[in-house]
Every structure is written in C-alpha cells, then in structure tokens.
Image (cartoon, rainbow, N blue to C red; front, side):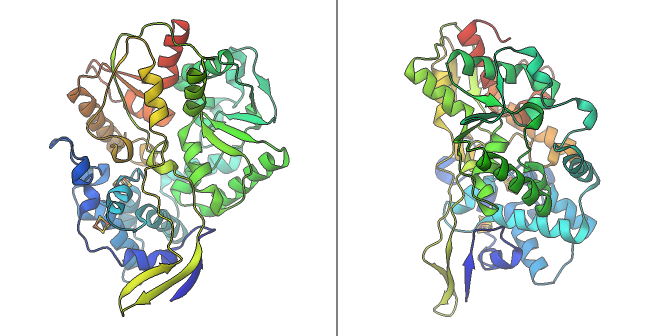
Length: 433
Ligand code: SF4
Ligand code: SF4
C-alpha cells in the first residue's frame, strides 16, 4: 500500500489504516479483564465516565478521526469539545493494545492537531499558547520567574553541565508546588548527586502545545530545546516533572535527536537509596497509596522510530513489513516510586485496584483543567474515592499536575495528597520542609 517513516508526527492520513481496524468492541472503556480487581472501579476512561457517550471513549475519537479523514464530517465547535474533553491519559490505548496494535493515543494526537489546524484552539487553550509564545512557559507572566525558587535554597549550581535537573515550568512557577520542588533538591543534595539547574534560562519542553494540537509551536520549542542541550554536551537530563519526562522520551524523537539520556528523579533517588547514599531513617506512620501518573507510567515509554511498508494481504488484512514496534505500557516507571515508598520506615503501602499501566487518571492533564475544570474535578474525586476504598490516609504521587488536581478535590474527606519528594524528605530529614 505505502511506504512510511514514523520519524515524524503522524497525520490522520498516516494513521487511517489503524483507525479503520476498530470494530467498536468498546474494550477501551475498561482495563482488560485480567486486570479488573473491583467491580466498582472497572472503568479506565474518565471521559466516558463523565460524558457517558461512546463518542467520548477512545473508540469514539477513533471514529471521529476516521470520519474527518474521509470528509464525512468537519470540525464544528461541538466536535472540538468532544475531541478535547479527554485527559490524553492513554488508558484506552493500553486497554485496546492488550489485543490489537491500534495506536489510539497517536490517533488522538493527530486528531487534536487536525482540529487545531481547521478550527483553532479552545479559548482557554489560546491563552496557554500565547503564554508559551510570549514568555516561554504556559503560565501567566505575572506568576514570577523560573528562577525565583532558587532564593529559597543554597548550594544549587546553575548553568549547563553534564547532568541537568530539569525542574519544569509547573514546579518552578506554581507556588503550591514549591515545597515539593525544594524537597527534591534537598534529597538530591544530601544523596551527593552532582547536577545543575538552568533557572530562568530553562526551556519549556512544549508539552502543553503538543497536547493542545499546536504542532508548529511544539516543534519550534522542541528543536530549540534539543539545540541547547546537544550544543552544551549535556549527558543526562533528570526530570522533576513526569510530563516533561514523557514528552522528551515519547515525542522528541519525532522532531530531533536529543543526545542526553532522559531519566525521572524517582529513578535517581531509588538508585541513591539502594546504594546507601540516601538514608530514610525517620518514621512516617501512615497507610499510603501510590497514584501512578499517566506521564510517568504508560505515557513515558520511549519513542521507537519505524521505517517500513504497509501492505494489504489476502484482500483485506493490513500488515507492516518489518513489524512496527508497539508500546504496551510495560516499560513505564512503576517500580522505583514503589520501592522508595516501601523503604520509608513505618509507611504501609497499599495498592488501589487500578494501577500501573491500567491506573485511572487523576484528571489533571491533556489541557482538561484549563478548559473543563469540572470534568477535571470529578475525575479527581473518582480517584480519591478509589484511594478511600483501600483505606489510604495519604495519596502519594510523583507529578505536580496530579498532586494539584487531587489536592483540589480532597474537601474534608480526611485524606492528604502528597508529592513523593515530600514523603521522602520527611523520612530522610524528619520534616517535610
Ligand atoms: S479502539 Fe480498540 S478497544 Fe476501543 S472499540 Fe476500537 S478496537 Fe475496541
Ligand atoms: S485518553 Fe483517557 S480520557 Fe481520553 S479517551 Fe482515552 S481513556 Fe478516555
């Protein structure tokens, strides 16, 4: 049929042969049966849970992509809402790929790009894009500078070096995430990890532009980022924020060739504890559960370039030659945060029914909090209800977006939401800073 290279963003045309494979089985609404541990918590799609129409499931968006590609529909404001009332959590992608090779997430990224091209951004997203273009991060310019936090801690070297801690725009600029960032830096310092930070010069990875569908802006930001880090010979990037981690690992390969190894901070801290350079000696006597950020788990799998041919055989079966690699969520970062929490004296770690590659999203990504805050809040409530099912007193995550969205939904239910760096700081220093 066609020769394709996947070393670039895929368009609806590139992906149409995969969209056409969907038989509307609806399995993308639930974790696979073998991973269902609770009847009450047996859904995986926050969008379908919120809006109740098939159009709002992974399959519904695949059908929209197929219809747009074939010219049977156009992007109206209503269609655009359906496309963006989705956290881009990737749950549907994992469930579908339990038995297929359909790339729902890639189709939804292409769908967002197509919608952006034809209909422009949602008003709430237009502001985010203006911010990114205007001052290099997605937040309001009045929120301060990305180096403000450096005034609150000593001994942090700035500038490019072999190992850079990529703080990320959320940790650097959101006042309610400041303590968690400072705790991470304290932990790295006491563990003897050599690193620098870039402060006000830290470039944004363009994650929000990618999720909003502005591929031109994402490409510009990604190429600038790659140029800065490659020219300086940076060998390792340690990401504080898993959204950056996921974007660097799963999407930068479509745009450029970043030379540095990309790791998340929990992997570095896990190594430090195993090596004995970070000691967790203080008790944190709580029953805790760990919420897998989609961006640290299933969405962080490394991009795998593919060059090959798509062929139709026996008149109807579409195959790829050589076989196209498929990410199925198994190589996300699941164990390091769990090992770290298990190493905290006194902490009892209990698992929620939906976890690892089949975790339920917190509702805090995909541009949903900005455009559909009620949907984001309802999803956070559902996740906290699940934490309540297993009797958790604290819900721990490793993502500023998850922590923020969940924290905003605790409203008197007697559960506390913490960043993993806060829990580890309490265990290492006897306080959360
Ligand atoms: S997207 Fe996948 S899981 Fe969902 S209906 Fe289609 S084939 Fe089934
Ligand atoms: S990405 Fe998440 S919210 Fe969106 S359709 Fe898939 S499971 Fe539902």
